[in-house]
Length: 340
Ligand code: EPU
Image (cartoon, rainbow, N blue to C red; front, top):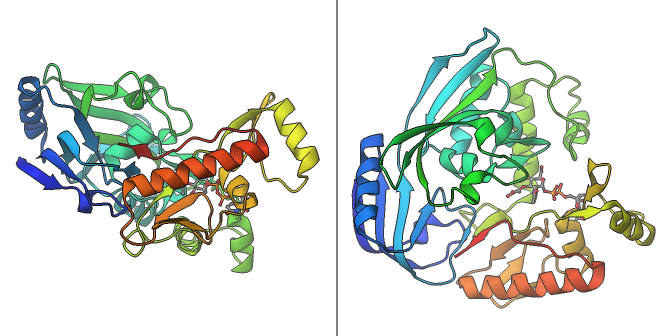
């Protein structure tokens, strides 16, 4: 187990922001997670559990304990039915490595989530999503150590209350568990792939691909993401900074009358989702900066560190954008990123 004091989190947040924590504990096995739990029962300091730090904005030093999983490895388990395979993965594995592995073996279910930054543990907390898919569609169960008791728990997916970028781990169960493993359920034989979302089909057409293989779909998604989203290794960022707001049908129709070109996603009979990136773009923010924090020039949903930005700089930009969107569209948008 790693136990470090006064530790810099610079390499643990993709925004590339310098901030320290009082203590940093990293577990590399279930037993070590139990040791961490025992330490935390003694120490009553504030707690922050992090994954790959790709959804994290640090605004100051963290006077407390930061916990990180370094549990690696994967194993294939036998599924109850012969059409599926269960893949049990250590929570500290990089998510995209798992997508690559599934695609390589011809297992369907993870491919639309290609190139999402972050760790396996976070996939189960954040319910990461993209291109009409989300982690909850393939999560089978989550294994975790309960902090209060040190007990190893098995939590089935249907207990996690998954929703759009939501789970019980973010609400009721916040700071209750240290996730050690996530088991995904994948289709052994690829069937019809989910290519209807956004510009996937257009990009496949451009490449003259009618029925893509898993590998071709993954390649297209990687290319689309690379085209639109900045590489955190080059320019600090946390992917989508805001969630796409869900509005009532009345509100949606009122806006559509005003902006007939407005993109939107159907939620249900009474609700519609409006892309925050589009609204921010309409407000003229795309490519603009406020101090060292800025809005990405190819996707207004992404805030970037233009070099040496502090968390406070990013928060200032975030608040200005929220205000402008609220004034122009009468809609409140909220960060998807966890602001600490
Ligand atoms: N748009 C603009 N200007 C912009 C950005 C977007 O006009 O600057 C328009 C686009 O033309 C499009 C619509 O808004 O019509 C939606 O844009 P896009 O598909 O680029 O993004 P999104 O659907 O809002 C979501 C996820 C992304 C995910 C993509 C692809 C959220 C908050 N974001 O974006 O997730 O990759 O769909 O499925 O749900 C992430 O979470 O880090 C992330 C990147």
